[in-house]
Image 1 (spheres, rainbow over the protein chains, first blue to last red):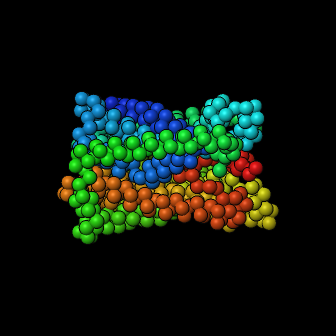
Image 2 (image 1 turned 60 degrees about the vertical axis):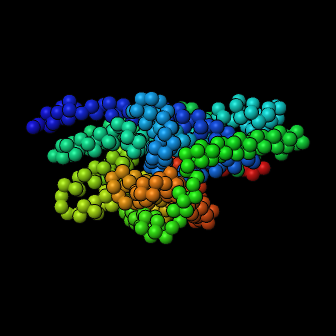
Image 3 (image 1 turned 45 degrees about the vertical axis):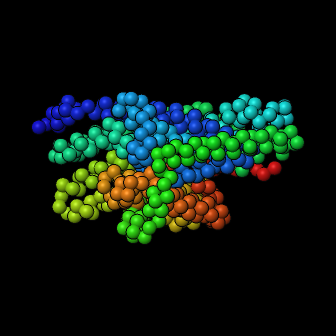
Length: 227
Length: 300
């Protein structure tokens, strides 16, 4: 078989695009989820309220030091199996939502730290000026600090998004039909084509990840606050 | 910490609001914990024997300790091989030869873009086609190779950006006293870059340790896998997985504290200052010294 034939046999027997589509969808939903949770956590950690600071710090330090694989296993074997918590009636969609929630919870801690490091790029004078014109904590955060902080945190946020896109492969633990599981079964049935199959999946991730990197580098330069 | 920048020392009204928020936050936290406890109790998850089983000598001797040992074994070997890989490719990325630099760039960028799990599955199934390694050793080898290729590439990038962050005068001074470019890299730039990047390097070790848990998917009997086996046998999966998570958190916490301590301890050892470790997975920021200076906020 020629190279082209091998490739077309693989693509006609297995729906590689559908598997990657699951990873892309997981990335999309978990990116939204983790950004929302992470922004709330960042707000808690920079707030003047000690108990909120403590809860935010505890969340970040606990989640960040736990392997994603354990969280995923815990959600499926712990929460789903033990508590019978069925989120939607459809079996496959249920696992997909579980995986998206776990990915959101895990990456929220990194989003929080990314935003916080962005807050650190805002010079003291900005906050002092905001206070001087009479803005309180929330108005100052919303109008002065956060817009600048978000621009400063584009690079770490982009890195978190890249990590998230790659970590969607762990959803295979939650039996979501995605790329890494598909690669495993493809190699098991076509062990002679192992290099070709690996190349296809590796390139798939390069195609997903590299543009995110280029885009965030471009955006962080373009949106950088001139000081 | 810059957070104090956002608000003044609170006055009487501010303190009152803070107290209200404090109480509200604690009430909400307690309510959530109570709800979790009620739900767990209803499902019988709080029964004493489900928890006491975790601390039996049998559980530790046959499940948790062997699990921790194989997790640490994979992590330590992967740390060593990644540092070696990272140093080789770090040097190559800074080479004056464009071909060497190009090859290293492609290799490093490729392995940083491919998920570790994909590499682990590939090497596990690929090496299984030969009878060189015994089947019981295969998952271990695949875990170490997968971790090495990814984390080694990240370390190569760390070293490169560490060298780029050094003041230009360092390299120029080396050239001025007649050292060759490669000698400058080896004896002046790299040692300082390693000092600068040591805290970030230690945070990368946290990533390595966490990612050994991916070995569970390719049947490597590490901590998560043995915790799961014990839990399935005793009917307390949730509890054993919680314990496994706590064990990971303890080890990682020790490593993170080490990184923080290192960054203060080594601060004076490099001419670009030692970067604070931040613990974002695989983060290499190519910040120049000016950006780093921006991160340092003067204390009022």
